[in-house]
Length: 395
Image 1 (cartoon, helix red, strand yellow):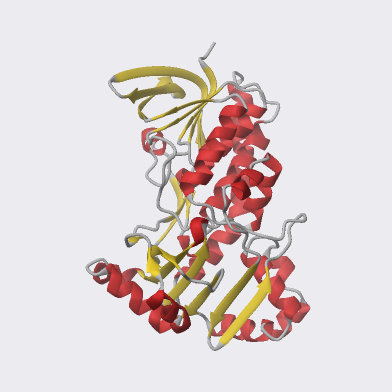
Image 2 (image 1 turned 90 degrees about the horizontal axis):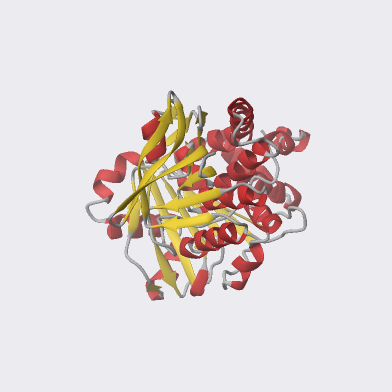
């Protein structure tokens, strides 16, 4: 008998959520992470409504609210002389989104997993996988000076874009698209413009309120400008905001910058094969996309839901049943995440098409269409639900 039914490697939002859901199924779950919790990580923090809904269903949303994270109940998008504004779309009675700091959200999810019965070891780095033939049967991990081998019926890699688990199983990349944008962001105190976006050719500016009366302002630029921007991130960032969101730039002039410049040009776009004999991948380990649409956390929670659903009622010691369930997980993940992936790639090119601008000008004339547009952007509805006759007429 294995030490655990499941070992989950990586305890941030994808891994902690998966450990939570599998522990609630009565499974013996070990959750491990190389960081010491609570721990921060690079993120633009935003949760779309499908992610908020999952936190509510899992009983974690109340803790997010209690942490002091402000509700975001309106959204705006400024582009080409337009300002589209609407209440956030409602999903199952939830009419606000949130952007919790990661050292809050990830820790809350890890604590919820422990409360559900999972064991949690932080500060532990997985060094290798244990195998029986071609099947993964556990992990070898190091915490401090001690190296431990843990057996498991299933090892789930939730350890990010540079996943050690994906590397060790040599998970194939099934789809990869070129880098599109780069981003720099920081936190500001004293900005009161709320949640929304500003878009122009070659620029995308996001403003996202979070804990402690702080607002993230993120500036996206084309990938081919990253080499220049990284030499003076502050200058590139401020120039982008000033050219695309002058009103926001004026507020920033009298606001207080509360953190250093943070940024990256390594925003990969891919789907990896998310499972194999005795292993699976979730979160950024399985699928990563440009952060311009802030889909990462929401996608991670969706994947956790999907893999837990696929494994419901499956005996972890039954290899064939587990492999079949993981194949179902792969199909469900691809179905759920393909559309937001392609729409993100289009947006990350930072070149608004004439058709999209024409659509936005038409949508802006109708509060109902504006609301549907934001419902599409947030994942509440899909493209086929948005593209009704009145939208097609605009195009």
